Image 1: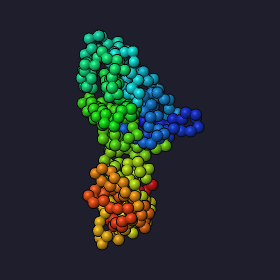
Image 2: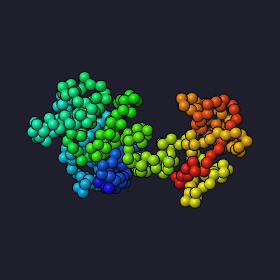
Image 3: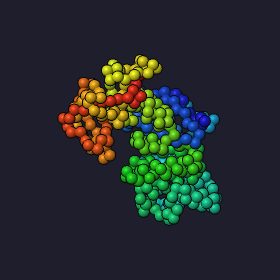
Image 4: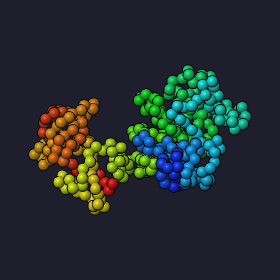
Length: 335
């Protein structure tokens, strides 16, 4: 169900170069929507437009039937968590979390109850009297999350909140964020450049490039059916070929893709078979050990082909191998 929308948004810092160009995006009630894309694509700018931290050059932002375009940031009732967490170093954990409630003039008993409830939800009960410098990175992240949520915001906005954590802690915290978001049913916009992180917790993903949204859909749809070459490369496709080569490899092109310009396939979707079973041969030029599999770069008549294989007996550099591709594993791209 639509809860809000960015409509025809333009943002320009110097009135000449557009950072966002005719950007349109729906927000659905209770979802976790991620903005994903390479550095400079406009995802953080989009989040700051939603937050009210950046003025738009054109377009409108509505939420729950209200035009928010010109409402100042302090009146939007949104929860914000930044990459740096922005905790007050001179305040205890309790006082950091209570800050927004005190700004709203709540009574002491209500503040105490709401802060303790949110600390329980965020897994930091017992840390009330500690200061930020006495906390680990993950604990500071939980405090920032609790502070943003305790005011019961209309929207929760997360700007690269896990980027300062180590890999193991990031996995734990993204699971925590998803659990809390689902438990509270709060509509959330999450900015990240990490595809795995994004796909693991999002209900929908908006992939951005050069100030525009190139595709917005569920992670499953984007992973299987990227809308263009840029997205396909961003989500892990490595093999791209002119459409003319599809028939050479015996692939069936769907009727609705008869005007496709490219086709692509993931490395793990190419099968290495006995040389007698296929007319497509290649020579191993590079072999990389990935732990549970090997990745090979093969020289073929079609160009370099990247294949990931779990064969227990690895292929050697210089060895000739044969390749088999199922038509349904290939993705055909119009652009």
